[in-house]
Image 1: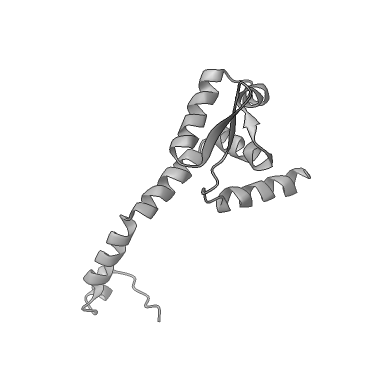
Image 2: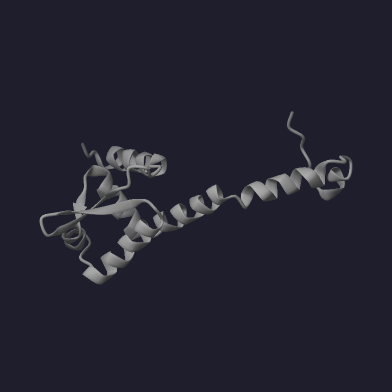
Length: 125
């Protein structure tokens, strides 16, 4: 049952309101929430979002990001580091090229949704 409360006076009608709010507060301080914050913050920058959308198509070399975004390697590398520190991407080497991809264990739910919207709205296949 959902109770509707509009002001603190309504809380006084229930004896357990403080316990309930303490449970919510504790749950919001959980490591999983901190992880969500880190991921959403990493995704919130326009360039990082675009990098993630590109990685949704396939693994990419840093030179491809530089070419697409017309940004310096330093700027691209800094954004890739943020995504890597957030636990979203990882690297491997192919010949002498550093390749970026999504981590296998990364939760891609949000980026998959955004990628689908991007493909739908831009008529990409």
